[in-house]
Image 1 (tube, rainbow, N blue to C red):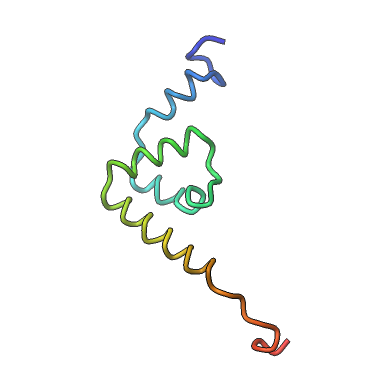
Image 2 (cartoon, one colour):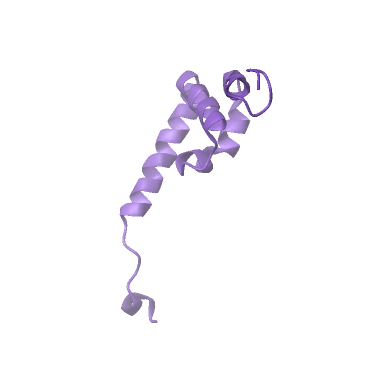
Length: 82
């Protein structure tokens, strides 16, 4: 495969170089935070976040929120009446 052929490393790198907008980043936000994006898409989102203060702030907020939820405890069976 040559570098520009689909499925090649060169094609993946070219895809990663393309700029994506805020809307596309926000639509992928939770998949990004959960590590569920493919490598090229994850790189595109990360590059956008490095350059966009508004999206970067949103990701920092959402990451903190998710971490706070994960640190919390699930209610016990006695507390839920089950």
